[in-house]
Picture 1: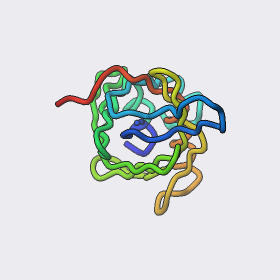
Picture 2: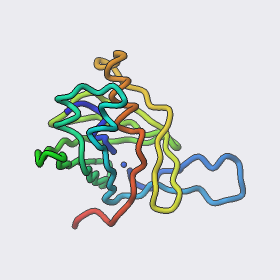
Picture 3: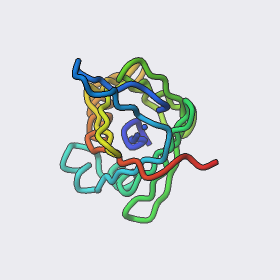
Picture 4: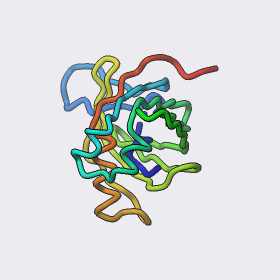
Length: 152
């Protein structure tokens, strides 16, 4: 699996951009987040057939104190898992794989209740070509929904 599906993903008590308003900053919290990537969505956005089959489906990303794990089950029943670390500066998070996947990336987030949306996605060297950029953008184009705390 490449970057996006893991995508998917997720980042302990990090400040989201507050835009200078009087609202308190919204935090991206540790927890389990879910998102769905349909095979058709991936295909419609230029992801190759094999990758779309292997990495579509229901994703669950667990963020826990600087580590993350993306687990998924494709619509065809294939499961997978990748993990790594993340660091944050303001509302920008850098994800780095340590096993199972490749293609590190940064992106900016906003939090609205239990929903996290992503923007300004950039892939990092050495996998910072146009294809990996497309994969990162497509896989992170869907919001994540926080569904619970990380397992103890």
